[in-house]
Image 1 (cartoon, rainbow, N blue to C red):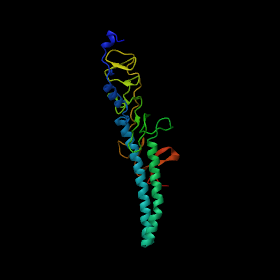
Image 2: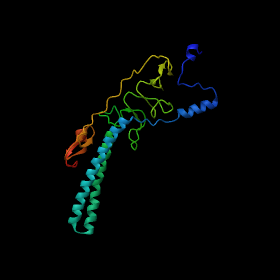
Image 3: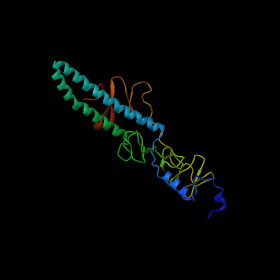
Length: 235
């Protein structure tokens, strides 16, 4: 039963009575949220994946340089062809290192050292689209049907029992969003601040580090991720 007080609330919920309304609601509910984190997280993710690309390119450059040198020394077309075939294995190793590095960037939370691309896992990560399937720290995964979300991610302090309220609304029992005072206001902690940019004085970003001078950014599983090494990543 609706009370006079409840009828005054401006809510984000819509009551549905006809079959057509129900079908439209079901169509919205079946939309799969992409779940994309905010711009700061995407920037940190891009820095991590770009570091992986730098590692791959440096490795491929060294393989190509060595192959060219051996090709010249062979002094024949057939000898050069043999060198090219033999260089395919080291080149494939460069791509294996690259994929491992990207995997580190996309590690979801709860797997040890979570990567910068996925602060909070909300869906199925897409290896071809950085950050997809993830939200930021403190956000709620509520689905794409709610207009107050960012690709299904409800901002910090706006989640209401599976619903997502607007910034000027409060949460009432039953997941109802209203401009009337509710039982919580921004109860979730704010997301952590972005890491300090260590490359403001020059250098190459390497995860949370900055490689300067003759250092290059490398992925080293034995050292736990991205590290700076002198001249080359290949030992």
